[in-house]
Length: 105
Image (cartoon, rainbow, N blue to C red):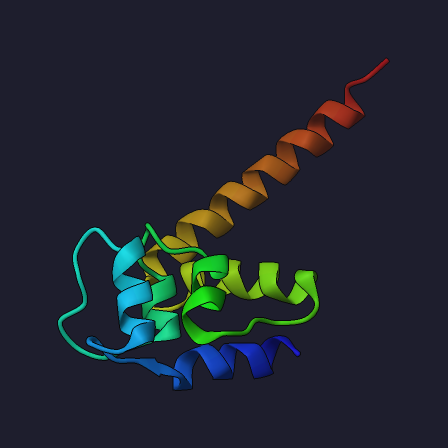
């Protein structure tokens, strides 16, 4: 389900000058000047998955799928250096939590 939703976001395009494009522009700080995929729009900081649902008249039926897709599209695509930093922070946090657990009386 996650792969199917990610595929939908990558392949569905929003064009400026259309109703969907105007909806997108209502959320954007910098207006669209070219067509963009829903995934490209989701990577913009002012857009979240619920905005995408408004633009494309639909979303994943399972809220867990929607949340997972929102996170993975924002983090994993186009920014490999961010992925590494996030992974390091997650591992450090897990080690700290584990250490605290071991040190409890």
